[in-house]
Length: 293
Image (tube, rainbow, N blue to C red):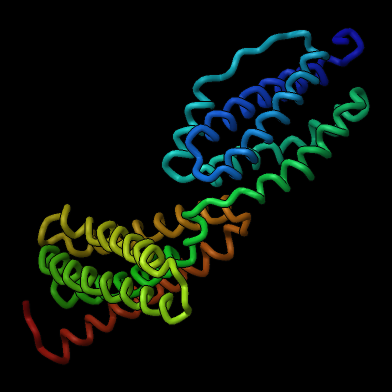
């Protein structure tokens, strides 16, 4: 079969064959530790389809390929840390860039039309069937993280000019952050309870953990830098804010198929805007109250 194909088409098929083999193994490996029998069945069905595609491409290349261990390890690690839904959707998103390659194959390989259709329709439907616990509580995590970003970013910015001492700022932020964590978590618990939900404790745990992690990351620059480097700590904290927003927004955009740019810009604008306003409030408070720390 290889003799009837153009060199360009053959190169594309080899690339796709390798990807299908890798993905088949990745799905199988992730299914071993994924929670929920339905999730395991769905992942194994995806693995079987990818292996079937591999066998189809092998008819054209006449090559028995070996899996790329580094790529398999990468996605297994991502699945362990960030969840299997994120890992497999990130992997499948890479296939969206294969549109032009498929268009080249359509003219030479009739079966490529069926494979592309199956990947777009059936595999997409199977991916939507995945039901991971942590994604059920994304709303709780977003609530905790957003509140911590807006509230603590503003407070730390205000403290920065009012106190002008990184240790005092960190101490104030830590006390306020821990108190706010318990307040936020308990509010989420009571809200979930009032709605008659049985997962109130789990929901408030996700909210509290997201809040506490955000607090720790925002205070870190003030703990690391010297007492007089409060302005450097402020700018470092703002960079951390942008990185947190970018990382979490990217995670959500991949795992839930949402657009990255609008959410990232909205959250960044709100957090930085509150920080700027609070910074000037700190200046005014220090000036009019005549406090000198």
